Image (tube, rainbow, N blue to C red; front, side, top):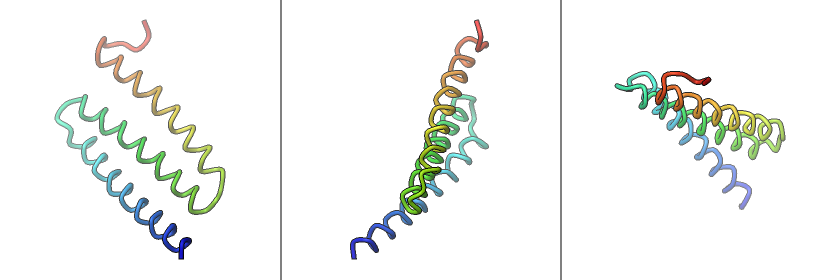
Length: 93
């Protein structure tokens, strides 16, 4: 009974994360300003990371957890670089 509840809750979480990724893609495509597009990109990488974590929970495979960690680090670095580019117009000083 508990295993069935966990399976259904992970499936529900994955479908909600996929929906959130679709909304983030819409914000990236239709964002009126560059700040909105960057915010959509941040949301997209966080949702992708969480979706990979839920796949890892569902399949009990550690590759998904390592990939989610790599996405988190690259996404954080790209967010800092894009924010710095928007503020100053250059990334490297």
